[in-house]
Image (tube, rainbow, N blue to C red; front, side, top):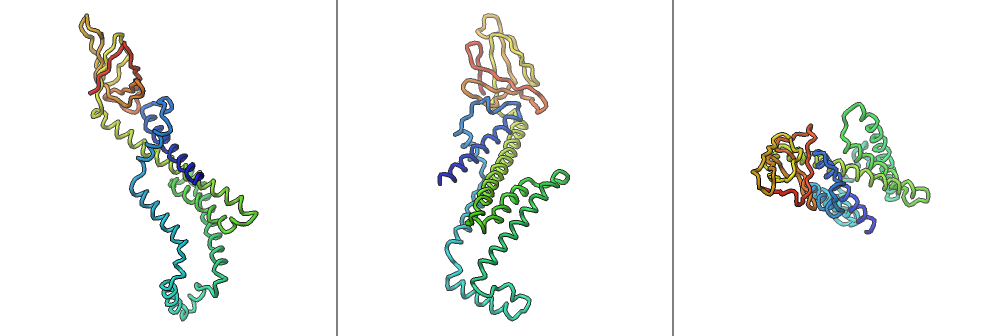
Length: 277
């Protein structure tokens, strides 16, 4: 439980960081400068799990747990198996599909696992090599690379010489899971940032008042000099709020685009006033 919980926390934190890195990096902001905590990363990553992923995980758990129920020993399973065997035996070409005795079943399963694991591992390595020249989904390569060695080392996991390869296969599967999770979170963060950029005019508007002039000349930003005697001397409009962290405001011009380096960082102080609309 401790190992599984630690792995889950690591996945959630890494996914949260990958999402924030893709989202804020799109606006030229390093998420490490925002002092985002571990809990915030985990909360962000939890929002990335769609109902489809949760349902798929539940089905996987159900299928794994069903193996421990020994359904093959029930009367219904034996009845169905007997009828299937009675229909297959008359066909000479299908007789080999039915093992001669229960003693052969573990050996057949062991051979199938070893063969499937070797085939999947070789396929994953081949796809990884040709991925430089042909477009291949990284998720497919990671899935094969994570499952193949596990199947290959599973039959010998209890042997003295098989424990280390199986442990390494588990580590490799965990690394592939982290890699796939980071790719998924990065894709969602990039997509969310692009959506924000498209709908930037609909985000929280900001009017900035300052005593001293600032170099805020991005596209869509309007500067107005206030009348003499005003507490603040300059007014800046046409800004939108990206995020706010501990009195620091990250602002964008209303007509911001990805190729522009304009991302303004304003610290709240007695020299400034920030109005949000």
